[in-house]
Length: 289
Image 1 (cartoon, one colour):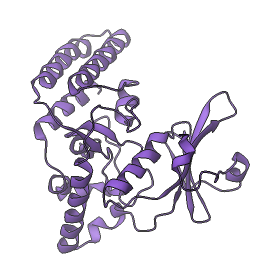
Image 2 (image 1 turned 90 degrees about the vertical axis):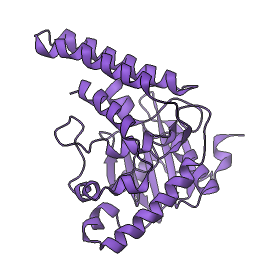
Image 3 (image 1 turned 90 degrees about the horizontal axis):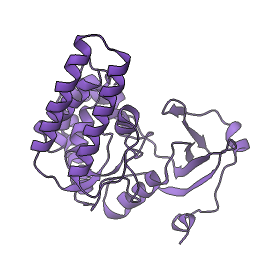
């Protein structure tokens, strides 16, 4: 079966010339992806636009009641510079971005939203996987991993996934030591990675489930969407929801509107908390500072 045959409008495509006539709504991933609105459709295209994102939305729409955009077509095509671009065409979903209105909501409205989101995430995490990676059985496409630690593989189990994170941290440590051979910075790096490795090895096993990978107020009503989704250990959504949320850390790039979301401890009310696993990843994060 060809990739296009699973989509309801597999003949629908937009040329580069058509897209150039429309100003992008948004640039993503350091301008490697763009989002356009054409008629009532949203078009996401770029070198980092993966077919796994479209397939994730299809799986979620078929197996849960989670509202996701209806994908009309998804395909890869030559980009003109020797590489390829991915394009996902989906129906537009209208609504207000939660991050823009959360602070103005009453406590009753917030409770209703939290209850609804908790139900959606329980449905999502009820879908179990037999590997760690993107839903099309390929490598992990989580930006946190790929941006900070390099390309990641597809894994048969949680232990091999954790070992690759440790290996990537050691590689980062070696590269930093080569750049900064000056006392304290170099001396502190090794013990940090050793501690992180010990922490990972002490973690209990987890189920592998379908995760969203980017549960933030700005992604509820969604533009960035499901590009970070995949099969990961069940703690992954909880940990990623706090990713960039800690003041002073290297990854602290959240919008100011997320502050009240975290102040209200919304994540701990929506998702099953995994504080031990979060602490391990925070230690890993410190290695990268």
